[in-house]
Length: 171
Image (tube, rainbow, N blue to C red; front, side, top):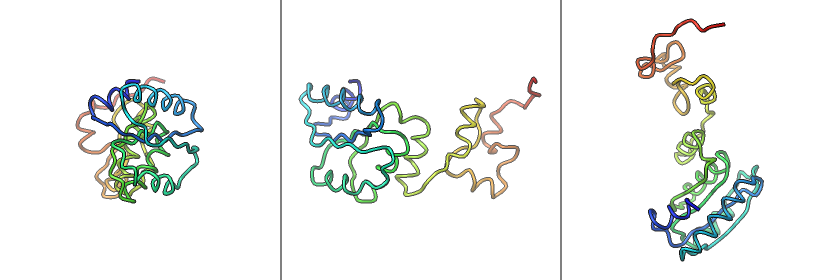
């Protein structure tokens, strides 16, 4: 419900389209609650469509969205499918803003940024960052810096300068 409030109040969206990943229970529930709350505030849901997690081609869905010209596209899917959808939407000329749910975590920031630019990202280092709990090079650009020899000891120069000197880890 908070996302619907944000869409209406802060983003001033009046007309939205909702694309739900039917494979994800959380996506289905977020969509249901968003639609219910958005409509209760006088908003119009122009289109509700479902897709499944392994969907990689969204051109038919995007083709249905374009003539409707929604103010906002609500996509409470996972990071991979949402990023693919956004990349294809931008490539096909859809300029509608996107809004998503809590699955749009740190992975999503990296994936979406790369996707919107027409690139891909293997998220090298991202899982290690979460597991190790310290800054390490991750995401788009890592291998560029690595190959140029600008990364030493597993950390980019600007990151290494921020870290405390490494101490021996207890066994």
